[in-house]
Image 1: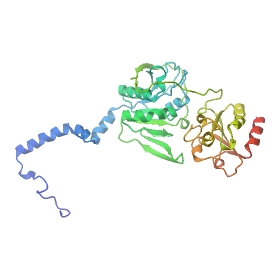
Image 2 (image 1 turned 90 degrees about the vertical axis):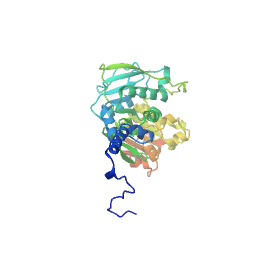
Image 3 (image 1 turned 180 degrees about the vertical axis):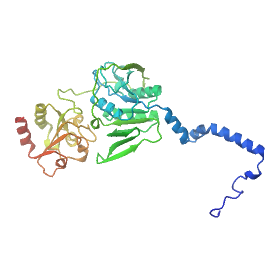
Image 4 (image 1 turned 90 degrees about the horizontal axis):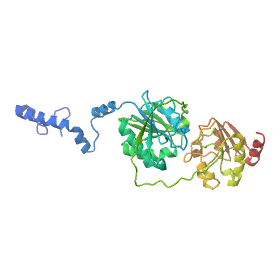
Length: 369
């Protein structure tokens, strides 16, 4: 054992005191050769290049953002895309590009500097593989510092795949942008908020919760537009989609939502909520308990594993208020709860609560509107 404070003996380390000048010159030449191939050696060994080299790569990537638009059938951007654009504008002062799969978009917010129209075959733009290929192709061409997607079912379908192909770990469900590399996202069904820092990464890939950001205002300004050919993914084929049509507003973007829970007792009783929603011009939602019981289809589910909504008015009827449901609607501006159980957790987050039998209260409320 070597005594503390004493230098290592010459038995365990080279003794340069007796090295000849020729030996030293040879070692310098070897070190220079090794230094020029350090990055290759480290990559071969599965290690990250030296920090200085990595930071040099990071500084070379200019601040710019690509916002991936949600696929739509019309000529307008979806509300979730407008929220993603607002989030992107908080990252930095650099340019923001919009990647869209529609050639009919007529208006974009003023913060958008350019539009990239991805050319995909037919409805294949709805496939996660196609969207991923478009994102990778756009990033390869322009080298963005940030890529922003919406934390929707569509966004969740491709962001993981895109992260794998881009070699970056996505930061999902962001509810606040603190800086270009620091974000806030919820944990434990929204009971805790985590501050996440994307360190040592020249590219940040994030998805943002639409209800956490205001919708950017659309202006009919003309911006630079270009086409992008998307490589076709041959292992997946688009067949069809089945979409339920309704004259009511879309659940994710409605300003008024009326939701029913297990207390509705059956799907037939949801007609009570439909009458109330029609009077208010709102959408119909449901808790997971109501969906699991077969009362309504799962596209009406509000909550952690359903849709996240933040309407101006949310009316919870016969919903106890499980934590999974609260995480999907607690950002609503005004919450009204109707339940005959006065101890139901829903009353803890409600702005107004009515302890009553819903089969008496809802028809009376609808009648007086």
